Length: 208
Ligand code: PRP
Ligand code: URA
Image (cartoon, rainbow, N blue to C red):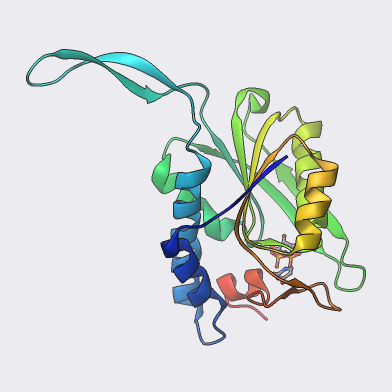
């Protein structure tokens, strides 16, 4: 598995604002979407292209366009939803799948409650999005589901990751490409990322 850590100052700046306890729901949603778009720009740098003929007002020319079956963006519910529009801003024709998982508050193990993926998933470039990669349990389970349904070309984008989550995902799925906005220090006793940003789902949706 390849792991890419984001170095762009705009991504770093926006992640810092996201972490602040005083950042409210509205701003948090906007920031998550913007970060997803900036990370998506980096993560999609290897999308295949094909040349087509176009007529400019001046002359006929052969130029590249994105090629192949449309992209599938797959958010892990709930918090991954906050990143979808950032990717769709870059690739508006992408299809969107959903994987519903929640972490048991006691065991911290992921439980599946929903999975719906676009058709021909085996032919698509899949981008799984979830702002938080903590123990890695949810990410590993999500990629398991996608592979069980035929998914092959998988990228995973997380805004903040703990070293434990990166290791778990690398070990379980060495064939995927992982993009991390910022690698944090560790997990606490409740398996929350430190320093992190708290509960991403609650901060996006204004729940507690
Ligand atoms: C959060 C987050 C990830 C998961 C990460 O979701 O969005 O999906 O925890 O933790 P892990 O790496 O230890 O599995 P949560 O289960 O809190 O659900 P929610 O998005 O519905 O709030
Ligand atoms: N899920 C979150 O939303 N935040 C964490 O720090 C860990 C898991």
